[in-house]
Length: 196
Image (cartoon, one colour):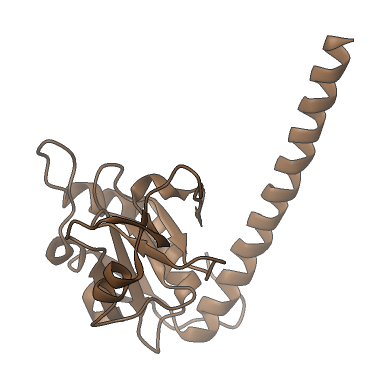
């Protein structure tokens, strides 16, 4: 399915050829602290980074600085779960507390020809999710190594078409979120009536 005005063929590329960064979270052990949240696969929920300041693990500034010594995380970096529940996705947005990720989360940053939101949407497709599962190593828990992840094939249109696709999917996501809130309010109302 194509939009009017777009006829250029989509290029099929290996994920590694579309990225300027592919990195997983920290592999080390870190002491508990009070500077930064240390998040994992379980914190990628419905396309968002969700954490609980009172329950999720925190580390100190020294450990945080050592994790990000060679790179930094940027707004809209794509986060992908690569241990346990393979294939969960979220875009990173700065929080009111610094965040670091355990090895179970990969950080992906597209090059200049790939929009971050489009990268997230393309990795949510059935084909991409199937490839992620196929490349997963099964041991004590499922594991997707970065070398295998980098070989996943994706199809990429020109930048203008990526932007158009993002707008369509964002509007659908907003509609879903709006209806979800309405549904939750109706469920609360029903529960209240049942109690009365």
